[in-house]
Length: 242
Image (cartoon, rainbow, N blue to C red; front, top):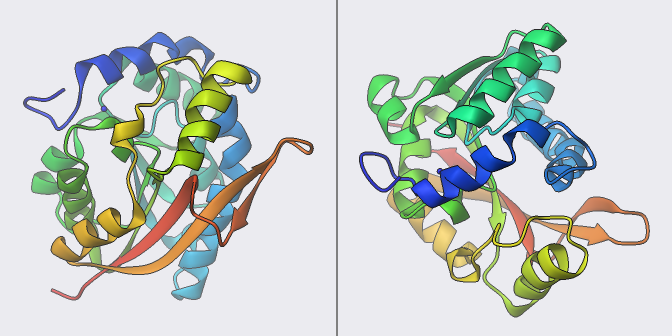
């Protein structure tokens, strides 16, 4: 997540490298990722099943995979999974955890744009969770995700909406009040409105099929899908035929 030669920012990479050793601590800085993971996995499985090719029969790429929380869960579901990231310390944690869990997940330190040139159209499903708001050019990243997906393949992303409510919940609430995220994790101006994401998708040859909000209940401490995308949201795109 460096400006050149990759579409990434060294400051962002340093942030994630800094919390690498606690990535798999369900009560540490990555707790929101652990809590969100079952919802994300269910969303991906539902999309794959509805398209007639279940996750267990799919070749999946997880872009910005971090320590491998989602990548491992998809592998457990039977998918053939490749995770890519540009944070070396985080990738090392992902590789060691998969080894300890005896899971056949592959990991590579490579950017999405570079991999798209190497393996265009190679994946049935391409996921990219909470990464687009951390890169200098999210439109270029989405174009790379589209290029990596097979014709009629799926691109599934999650990100944060640029709204006052998202600022209150994701930054003021999560980083400063509840302190479930390290301060400085997010920058409000990098949040992405659904209309912007949809426009970038159309330019990249993607059709937006679904937009689902994610809400958090502080009483039950659980995430749920919602019709309200004003804070977090999931977006499902399908790549056009060539």
